[in-house]
Image 1: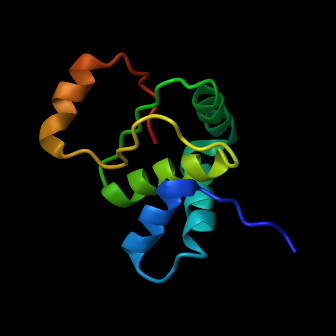
Image 2 (image 1 turned 180 degrees about the vertical axis):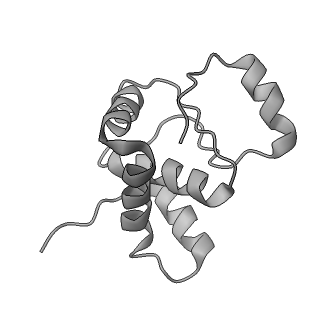
Length: 108
């Protein structure tokens, strides 16, 4: 029997949002993140997160974006995410955020 990863508050909020599929949600998010990003990019993102670096995830749709953000939080277990956690940012704030941040052109 394998232990389920614990994603802390991020996984709890996200699993409550899908209503009822709480036990499968973290696993699905991790699998989706690996499929979207690939192993090499996923390791780079985990490395940056573990070193308390800033991560900016961009996507055209909110579900893959939320899955990627929650998947990262789950994979960081047992360490909780210490920074701000905004998996989905309103569209009107996207341009302002992009202008304020230095970001990599790597996206999911």
